Picture 1 (cartoon, rainbow, N blue to C red):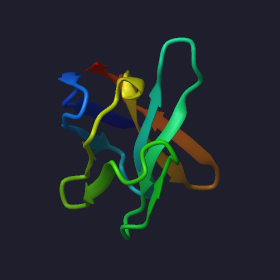
Picture 2 (cartoon, rainbow, N blue to C red; picture 1 turned 30 degrees about the vertical axis):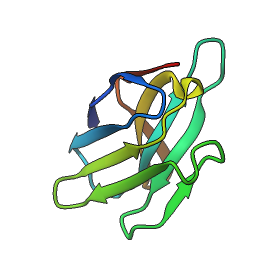
Picture 3 (spheres, rainbow, N blue to C red; picture 1 turned 45 degrees about the horizontal axis):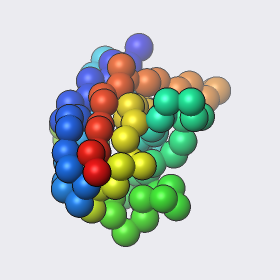
Picture 4 (cartoon, rainbow, N blue to C red; picture 1 turned 60 degrees about the vertical axis):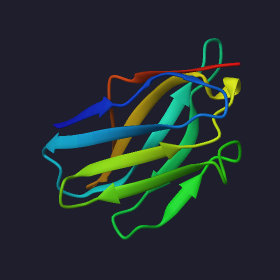
Length: 118
């Protein structure tokens, strides 16, 4: 099993910044990629950003140019730097890790609330 522990959420004014962290532990072999998804009330969960162990990144269209994902492989930790936050960024942010080992397995963190006030 893989455990993902998120931190760094909170309340921020529009235009502000937050940094989320997600630390992975447990059976973390072959975990790749890691990333962030978010879910706002009444909406489906959507991609925020993913990053592979080699540093290749992928971003959702709504966050490109504002959010930056990074990864410390030695610490098994992924970060999400969120700048120029907007009220529509308000959501629960979930850390995700994927293992491809014969089959695809998704692991999820418990989620951290990000609220952006206007």
